Every structure is written in C-alpha cells, then in structure tokens.
Amino acid sequence: MLKALFRFTLCLLFFTPFQLFAEKQSLDSLIDNVEPKVIDWRRHFHQNPELSNREFETAKVIAKHLESLGIEVQTGVAHTGVVGILKGGLPGKVVALRADMDALPVTESVDLPFASKVRSTYAGQDVGVMHACGHDTHVAILMGVAEVLSQVKDSIPGTVKFIFQPAEEGAPEGEEGGAELMVKEGVLRSPNVDAIFGLHISSQTPVGVIGYRPGGMMASVDDFRIRVHGKQVHGSTPWNGIDPIVVSAQIINSLQTIVSRQMPLTKQAAVVTIGSIHGGVRSNIIPSQVELIGTIRALDPQMRLDIHQKIRQIATHVAKSMDATVDVDIPMSNSYPVTYNTPELVSHMLPTLHKQAGESNVVLIDAITGAEDFSFFAKEIPGFYFFLGGRALDVKAKDAPAHHTPEFYIDESGMKLGIKSLSNMALDYLKN
Image (cartoon, rainbow, N blue to C red; front, side):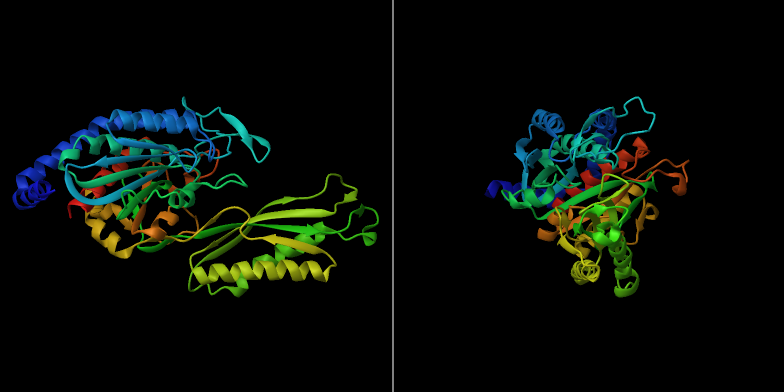
C-alpha cells in the first residue's frame, strides 16, 4: 500500500507538461484506432436488437469483449446487465460509466444495409424491434471506451466501472428491471462508486455538439392506467346501460386542464398524455369497460405528486357524475425520478468537455420532458448526463427524424466524440 501511495505521489509531482501532451497524443491515437470497431459493433447491435430484459445476445457480445481486455466481468446483473471493473495501476476513487442496451417495439423503415428485420412479442402483440433511440450507439461507444482505458490502465489512479444496463425503456409489466433494479442489487457498491457519467445520442443535435444542463435536466416519468367501469348494453339503447366510452372521453378532456389550468408552469414544465384507449369489440355494443393508459412528466417533485392526486380526483369524480366507477393505478409499471446533474460535478467536468468538443460546441440546453432511468444512479451518487450530437450536418433540425420512430437515424461520425468524452471524463475525474 505504501509503495502504491509513493508511486502515486511521484506521479503527481513529476507529471510534466510534455508527459501530459504525450499521454493525450497516445489516447487520441487509441481512440482513432477503436472508432472503426465501434461503428462495426453499433451496426451489429442495430441489426440484432433485443427488447427490455431480453438483451441476452447483446450481453454475451459485451461480456466477451470486456473479458478479452482483461477486465473483471459480472453478468446477469438485473437480469441481463453486464458490469466490467477495470482496476488502475494507482490507488484512487471509483468512477462509473453507463450505457443502456435495450431496443423498442418499433418496425424500422430506414433503408440501411444493417436495418433491423427482427420481430418479437411485446404486450402480447407481434411487433418489429428496432434501436429507435440510439442505445446501440451507447453500447458500442462504451465498449470502445473500455478498450481505450484498458490500454492505459497502469496510469489510471483508481477504478473504472463499466455499467451496461438493460431495460432503460422500462421492464415488461410485472417485471423489475433497469437502473432501479441494478441499484437495488448493489451495482454502485463493491467497489463503492464516487461519481457516474452517461450520455445519450441525439438525432436533433448536430454532430460535434454536446448539450448539457446542471440540476434537473430530464423529467420524472410515471405511467398510469385508468379503468372505467360501466354497464354493457346494446348500442341502440344507451339509456339502459352506463357508457364507459363517453365517460372516458370526458375524463380525457378534463385531464388536459391539469397542466393548462392547475400547474404553475412559470416554475417548471409538466405533461399529461393519454397514449392508449381500449374498449369494445363491435359498433352496436356499448362495452362494460374501457382502459386508458398514459404518461406523466414533471420537472418538479411536488408538481409531480400534485398531478398524481389530481388525476385520481378528476377520474373518480367525472366517473361518479355519470354513474360509472374507476380504478386508477399510478404508476402502472414504470416510475423514474427527475434526472438530476450534480451542479458541482458538472462545473468540475465542463473543462474536459470543452477540450474534447471545443468550448463553443458545448451548449447549455433547456430541461426537457423526456425521461431517463439514469436518474436512479444520479439519485444515489453525484452524476453527470449529457446529450451527444448525432444529426448529420447537412440535415436541418426540422427534418431530423425523432427518437422512438421508424425513421430514426443517427450519423455514425458523431460517435467518436462520445468515445473521447467518456474516456477523458473518467481519466480527468480520477486524476483531479
């Protein structure tokens, strides 16, 4: 132990500007060399996507790669997650880097030689499967970072923990998963992690640009379900029953007043959206039940709780006024807190991002109502999550395909900055 501390002290005392320059040149060279591999890995994962908690083959590829680098590997974390532990040659803190692995039930329409043709079952339905949110790029980038850092491990003062996380998009109903389960299973312990970094590629942000925000950056999310119970009757005599379809329509309209008339929107943004309605099988039968499924987004914890209460209140009272009843489940299955970037950590790491992207390309952005379960990691320890540009420079923002759509597309030239950013953030955090 004393010998290691002595070596570490010498490193701090005698790390000359020339040595720093040489190290940077070496790291840049390693990143240049790994970039083609990262693109190949990304294409493989894109062509072979897997849904949440079902990332079995993805995990095998990751684990095999980490093992080939001499990194200690843990598998089966939170069902299919993979964790790699790289111990540096000098004592120091522990930093974690995270990538999410799962794809979405979306049928790809992009004409690519490596486009997904995979089909699977989701919520009992046959669906196409696609990396329609860029998680394939996240995995490939972090695999590249692991390769780069493994080649300079003797000079690393501390430990790097690589977290490949399943089910960011939410575990299937009735299952646990994602970052929340990883935290529960102890992924931030043994060794204890001091800080965590993560990125999300963005189809709306131009290649070469990084978007960040200290404090609350992404909204909390809670899905919800409202079951409206009426009385089934023939469609020709609605007065003999209780129509849950009409009740549902009134509930939906009333829910829109929560944000527009009951939330202090000058404080923070919020969203209530109904995304699914199911009820009935024939044109001439009023059904006994209708099911509404939706999502709640909030950037303020108290507003989040207020929205929950108001949804229950509106659904119950509207239904009662029309002789129907309701069951309200909030959350139905998925519930993530606000994604919070520790301001002190952001301030500490911004110079690193400036060096990698250029100061003018590191942009302070507004908070967004999208959500991320990276929030569970950042709730436990200091965290910094940022957006990485993935929009081709010749494509206008208004023409860029949105995430979670069949047209989603990423310019792979943006991935190199992701490798550079995470590699240097890990090293700079541990050294400074």
